[in-house]
Image (tube, rainbow, N blue to C red; front, side, top):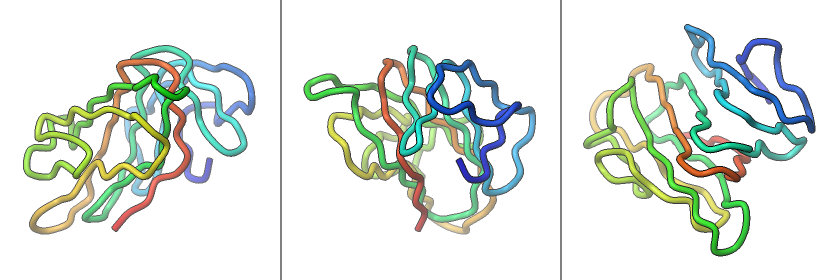
Length: 137
């Protein structure tokens, strides 16, 4: 939960409805929706949960997994409130659509051109996703 910016902080092992603050500082992230924060992962309890992250890097990856084998979780990624287009990673299309099918590292953003401060958002269309860690390149 390092640099977690949702109001009132993280509540461990208890379902909680989180909201994203109006503004995020660089390298800070927040949740929106009904999540359970566990010591090793965050778990989405209801569809339409979001993670928002303010970052400065060429690539943004997220280690995540579905709630169980054979239970995919659809998601959509936005970069600065727009579909990523040419900045989409290997695991999303240019409109930002992707699916979590197995536990692994997902490349969500791969920016061409100059690297600047950006705001990343991922919305999960299905419940149950487990998020473990962001990595950058």
